[in-house]
Image 1: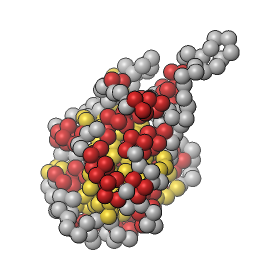
Image 2 (image 1 turned 180 degrees about the horizontal axis):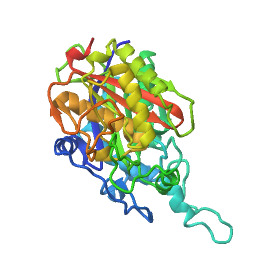
Image 3 (image 1 turned 90 degrees about the vertical axis):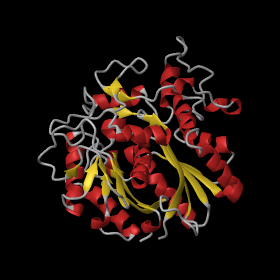
Image 4 (image 1 turned 90 degrees about the horizontal axis):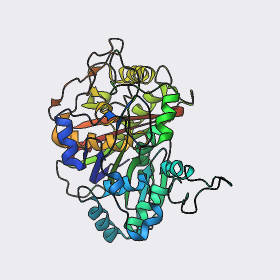
Length: 401
């Protein structure tokens, strides 16, 4: 069970494009959540919208992939020299030896929503310029990414709700371990659309103010959008101390309820335990936990019970969704990058918007940033249907345990 190296990574969300802006926002405790003014949505809620997505233009030969989700993907791929790093990996290993594994929940469904507004009034037919296969289709974002880079290795999309882009790390790891590929582009892309905004509202899960994870008065989520990517490779012989390693992945499935977590967090605890075991670490070794922390009453309570059962109440933890919003299928990838920044810069980000912690949740929840050396972090991503995934990341040579 060898570790993998995150040789390059990047994130674009409502708090910034690329690593520099993201780190600055975390240090300044800035939230990207604003009153919702997306498209025609008329809901009293806050969203984490990425500015400038509609202005992104896909290359002419990839015009068939044009939709908000793939524009956001391209915007993310253009940051931090990530595209150049993937191109270099393709030259080094061969295009057929680099895989693509992307997580998303709704993919380009906005393109279908827009197409339905232009249906033929007589026949109801969708407009001729609507291409489902390269836009709304869940595989679209991985297909776009592999075509953008000219990669011919295995490609897949994981769409398991909010654990999607954490689980792709496991998919890539299995492919590399099996010897099918030498490197992988992993990540998550999810963009705003009416389906998720009105859908979560119909479930009574949306807050009318910026979300407040683990707050005593928390009352729901704020939806965001993001594109986050990492290039996974085998650990080289020489490793910088600031290098970030994927040490462990844990997956589980509650199968408890379609939209509610197991009340005791059983599956969440199993995922965290499995990630620790793969990393050959104990709970006491983890310096910081990036909680799933959606800010709904039931999800936060369930996760708190699972964390407390495994880690007790001393390990520093927080949710960064008060800053970015819940980016759904992109959350696992985005928060993995945030954890990588925490490792490299010794920053445990305090939870934004949370003011009064719920006294019923026995956690060492950070309300302010804490700056100190961080060697091991755990990131949680839990989705509808009880699909759970936890990642353990470590720093540099000390990360190989």
